[in-house]
Image 1: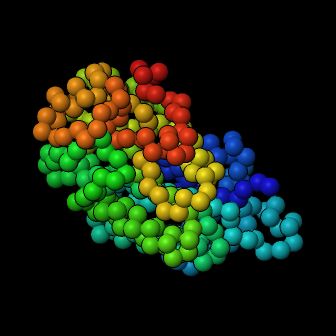
Image 2 (image 1 turned 60 degrees about the vertical axis):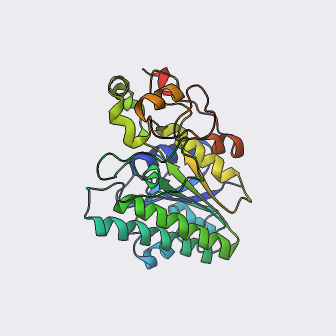
Amino acid sequence: MTKRIVFTGGTGKAGRHAVQHLVSKGYAILNVDLKPLDQPGVNTLIADMTDSGQVFNALTTHFGFDGYNDGHPPKAPDAVVHFAAIPRVLIEPDNKTYAANVMSTYNVIEAALKLGVRKIIIASSETTYGVCFAEGDKDFKSFPLDEAYEIDPMDSYGLSKLVNEQTARAFAARYKADIYALRIGNVIEPHEYDRFPGYIAHPETRKRNAWSYIDARDLGEIVHLCLQKDGLGFQVFNAVNDTITADMPTEKFLAKHCPTTPITRKMDEFEGPISNRKIREVLGFKEQHNWSKYV
């Protein structure tokens, strides 16, 4: 039977690639967003995730007109993927960014679990590692950045994602559900690889992203793998590609550009400073779009 997935924020930069990938894998998708998505076979329900009533309604609506042929009201979906958010600082005032991202995530998780859904994937962020939107030049505490790192953002966006992870942890414990939080790296679409020569020539510009990234298409595969993997309870996964965006081995590069930051374990030759070891070992992720193929 085809799995029915409600995907919030599927019109966004990351979401639209993930939705396209999930459709190719045979999922039935309802996109819930403030703007429509141009994706054949995917209906968009316009809804505000900060309104709990709209969220409950969105999770119990037909995916399209063909649903009326079933002869009964729609049931809750098999899983929910929640990407909807104000996607960074400096788009809306800080208080709105924080409030919208925190309440939308609370509303989605609460509604899904109370309706019987037991698999939820939420978008967290590399910004939780505290450097991306930090004031001034802040150093990371250690490398590699893995899921056990003590996250410490100082900005409204990163803080909202930290809170969302804690919200997910609490609900997963209460309902004995699977909720996986993806700490998504800097999302790179296929047409954006022309930026990489500049990144390599000026590595200082990539410190805030920890010289890491996620190809939007590989992110779609990570979401698919999360949907396929059951029974893990609450989990955090770094959603990044394998390698550092630099032209020298990782440990040598970090010694040059972050000389006072300790490296806590032996790193692979070109391993990304944000480690994706967990998604490779637990979910079986194998990247398809390493940046070096396109530059």
